[in-house]
Length: 155
Image (cartoon, rainbow, N blue to C red; front, side, top):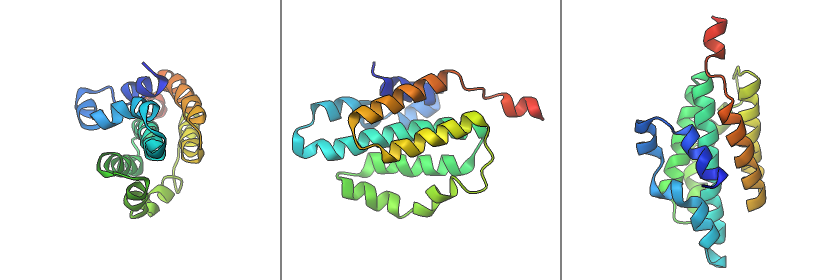
């Protein structure tokens, strides 16, 4: 299983979440990209990026019970499932652009949350499959060590 697929399964571990988010499109994005003919590669790359970004936002949402992350996750999921081209992805996400800006506004996160946000930002900037794979590996390592109880311990 690729780091991408492992991160998906770590982020969406609960059965209800897996049923909702681990669709054939999400699970197969890595393989679809690898098998894509050159004209289809840009779209498949964007699908891979969406799946990775979804995983990171899911972890962030769970780490801080962060509603904006959950709403942004829903937009990314919709773009992944409904788009048939990079332009479709841009259109779907563009309608909700302000939501992604809000991810960084008035957000209190701990160090791990900041690392997730950093990985999310790097995912959006990544322009090669190698960079996405590197981010997926880092995300997987981070996901395995997240302390979801840290905020609860502080109360």
